[in-house]
Length: 486
Image 1 (cartoon, rainbow, N blue to C red):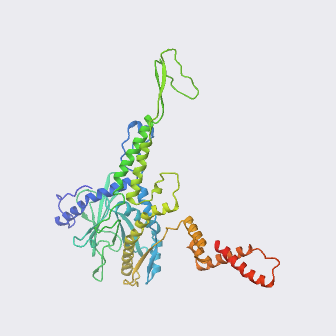
Image 2: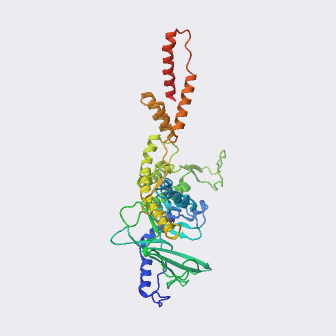
């Protein structure tokens, strides 16, 4: 982002102190901003791979196309896919929370929030009030990457206490006409700035329409009390610092090694991965060698030979090893990288998933707290600008969907073990195999099992009255035993 010029005189009442403060905000955390851009490029497959002209021609790549075996999306998406907000619990008007969520189409927006936080380490949700819709509005904002995005400055004394949130973006209004905009969100006011397309001097930006037309700064209070900064921070891998850490922090160097190894493998396959024929004392070698053809020469001293293809197994093993290392350090199941056509045993897959499940549970806690803060702010805006009536002391709880369903083979094996050990009833085993069924469905299934098994019980011919009575008990026991096998 171009640096601010402090030479120009103050404009629209902005003094040099304010200009200096804006310049300082603009220069903050440049290193982090560079990393945000790096992680986004790697996630999208922009790895700046170095290919020779022959390799680029061989792969039919244009100058702007990258060649890479991109493992970064696997690391990010495998975790993001396990984070789905199911809803919110609240003792006071929970239906209105669900309505805000539904009308804002947050079922899709939340996926963007989780993916961005996991990919970059930080992302934000801006909570605003819409007079047109008469409800809160939620917008996902990427972390500032040195050009555009949102950034939160925290207190030096308390890392969780935000001092100001800065949103920067660029508007394009014509050929090479770009206007930079900056909004500063304080607990008690919102300040808007624009460079009016100059690329240098900041000026106060005043809305010309709406509730705050002609007002600068915009007051952000209720009964004289600050409403608070309407920006909620989502930190990935919260380790006690003001900002999170990307899941790609460690894999990026390995990704470079993986891309380099793949290029080496293709280059080796291109030049030495096949058998080559040699000829000495031959006036002219054939242009094409095809199956069944005969090589001959009128020179008695002519001879033919061959150079065997190179062994590429070492490079292939190295490629697989790097992918295994990426899986290990990110706790992503190795099976997600599809390194083999063999299907791992159920126990092995369960063990591989344990690290990913643990990460998902941790993010459900930290991201869940952030989603609760989003709804707390939305409720406050509803009480301030909307119809009100919501108890701001009522606790809001974010619930995540449980998508870690047990493997069918594992459940069947457990049910079979319980039957053989005679340590569980039919009802217990039906509940085990169908954990999502309600009590009515379970009882109906048990009745069906017993009816079907009873139909297969053989009649006992020529029995005496006493034998019938005894046999009836035996038959009943046998029927229950067969029903228990289902």
